[in-house]
Amino acid sequence: MNSKKSVQVGDIFATPLPMNKYGAVKVMDIIDRSYLLGITSYIDEQNPTIESKGIHQILITESIVDGLEKPLFEWVEGKLPKELSFIGNIPLTTDEIGVESNIYAGKWSKECGIDVYYKWREETDPQGFKLEMQKKIEEADAYARRNVISKPKKMMDDQVFWGIISLLDWSKEDEEAIVEAAIKELSIFTAWKIRHFEETLSYKLFLLDTEEHAKEIGEYCFSEQNQAFSPDLFLYARCAVVARGQEVFEGILSNPSKMLKDTEFEILLSLSSKAYYLKKGKEFEYESGCSYETFSNKEGWSNTL
Image (cartoon, rainbow, N blue to C red):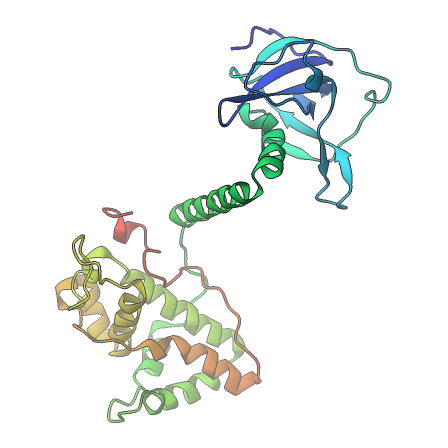
């Protein structure tokens, strides 16, 4: 716990680090409620004191801007974190007076000295550090996916959308032949309308992305005991529902028990890209507002995610 009532230039604070270690930061400048911190090279299992050698040296790291080795200074703002402990004040050296930094690290938190830990880990256990950082990135990505708010962009008129879907020719056996007429019809529309079609398709697949629907797809249905459940297979099963037209889609959307069993139609996902290529001769690049990937509908999987 810190006991400082006010922060002064030259103040040194011990910072907690992972693996029961400690670091230290030095206040280099103050502007209103913003503080320029120098991340020192101190890292040890013992809390630093004003005599500790490392607190007199600013950590040298590789700049993300130009790749050069430079002392690390970062701006933070807000209150002094309660987890930091004041260990003393060391007046700025001639070289430290007037230092500048364009690095903004956000709110002042107990993590403000973490860079010295990262450098220590990279030097002492590079492979372990790499795996650790990969895990952090994966966890951050997973958190972002769980908390993203899905909202569709501009969509195609429902009547027009279902009109194109109705062109799927179920008298044919080959899937390419089944979708051929629908692709040709869609290619007549503008590039933007093709994107609107893709958005509409994505949203309808998103609406079907629920645990209750996943439990009704047949042999590979979702359950806590069924290890054979495949997110991809469930997506293709949802494609089959949309491909069967508006009446089937709306009936199954409102009543998951009517979900088509052991049926899939993956090729539906390629309608927009094939139509766009037919029209423009280019690859179709578009990111929908609502992802059709399984588990994207948070409300639909609220009991599981």
